[in-house]
Image (cartoon, rainbow, N blue to C red):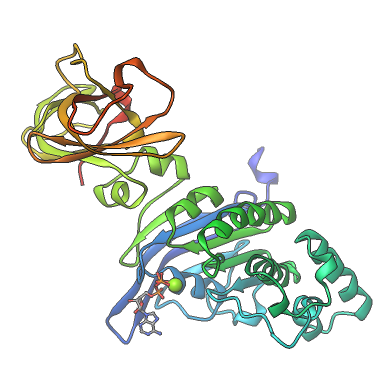
Length: 371
Ligand SMILES: Nc1ncnc2c1ncn2[C@@H]1O[C@H](COP(=O)(O)OP(=O)(O)OP(=O)(O)O)[C@@H](O)[C@H]1O
Ligand SMILES: [Mg+2]
């Protein structure tokens, strides 16, 4: 048999989290029944608002907290009870404290020395790490003589110097200002990919998760709301909460008016929407229809179709160079966000405050939200 020769662990993910919960003081459910597989080489992001349990989950992976329930496996081995220092895992904290009195080199060498690694081997490893994070010429400087982004790279070099199997990053860029954050996100991903280390990172910044992660989980109140690629979560949110949390979105509400094999008709205050949908819905059931602002088009002309457009008045507009952002007020009082690319389109050229417009969109721009 073909399968018999394969190791039982052949398809084992690097990290397997099974029904893990953390309950503090007998009643605070910080993490609630989380199950997740992370494959080798993935960069997995935990995304969610403050207090949703991101750091607690990461701390359990690192071994700084013990789960109240559930098991954690690394490469097929149960590590739930294994002390932190015995795990081939390294964690970079929310505020990555570098040792201020040590040079960049000594900061990177710190963990290796503590492990009793040979002197020459340490020197070699430190040099390789410095090269990796492009700080070779800063080896002798102290942390305070570096920029925020450079300090962040030293912290990363220190975290991967011991060649962990799993790297945990808690808000790795939290200490940087917005502009530096964006450029450092890409550098960080390049370094992580070059080393090939599997990574679980925590962030409350959705753009950061989308930029850096191969897959992500949106968390709320200790649970996962949705797990998937950034693209899948952005384009196919499974609930109102996820749609709202990831980027801007317009949500129309209304009851299901007609239920068909491939679509439902939803009667909203401002329009009748024909939404592609293959799962059966109950007639009269209240649903939401989500549409991203960049998926909408604006025109002064009334679209010919009977469904999937609304009429309104431009109440606000802002020019951003590559696109223009409009607020369009509908008869119900609802205000739509519409984002239009800045190539001159005759139908919407020179749209102005107070103009009467129609917003329309393609069928596949809509996502039906039943919860
Ligand atoms: N040691 C503790 N004892 C009691 N409650 C705790 C403890 N640590 C965390 N909590 C609670 O558990 C919940 C989750 O905390 P956690 O630090 O995991 O959130 P987080 O998602 O990392 O938030 P942030 O984005 O603010 O860092 C919070 O309600 C927090 O108050
Ligand atoms: Mg945290």
